[in-house]
Image (cartoon, rainbow, N blue to C red; front, side, top):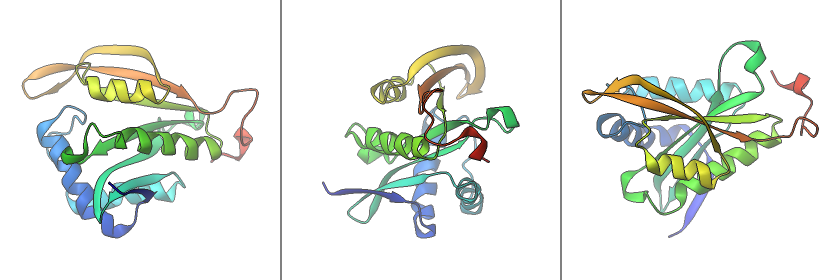
Length: 179
């Protein structure tokens, strides 16, 4: 399989919306109950890109196999050195290492931008595939919030994992240069 990881372009958004819709309707990786419209997905992607953050797609033979992006972990100024990752795969492309390739590239690009930490907020402690993916990419579990979400008639845990992008004593970019 030929696979190319590249930045998102507007023409990708209908396929991304289909991938995300699948996860909203059939999984607990997202706690949304209703899939966002294409307009909403476009607005969300533009918000990420306007911040200068990576929004990546994995393309396989003219089809999007998955996507990953970084967003601010929290909006208050003190959190500006920390990002949160999101990774979603087309169901036909799961368990093929594509998620790891996307996540590794995302971590690399965010580190090069000077960010310090990446947080994974994994919906559902039973989402073993996402937990393993993040462990393989160097994340460690730092906490679990029990029963804080609700979807598909049951309460869900939220697993927090963390990966260091740049050591405090060796930042790629001065923290004062990050918006």
